[in-house]
Picture 1 (tube, rainbow, N blue to C red):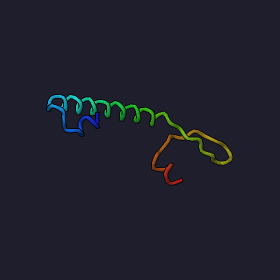
Picture 2 (cartoon, helix red, strand yellow):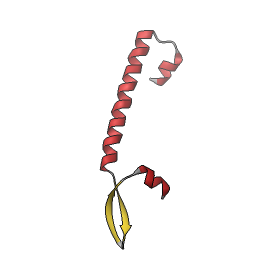
Picture 3 (cartoon, rainbow, N blue to C red):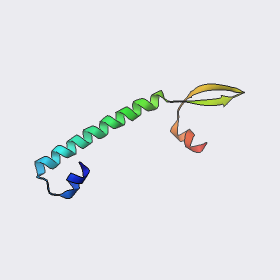
Length: 63
């Protein structure tokens, strides 16, 4: 899609169609990522025990 759009050789209607499809796919992917993030858990060792804890990307980057 991107290559076709970047070529500049498409009629306006086809360009708009591809752009709309790309935006829909982007939104769908973002929704799936958001849903996956809510399900991810990390095992964290605290006091000699492992316990499940919600995944927080900002915390994971610091460790």
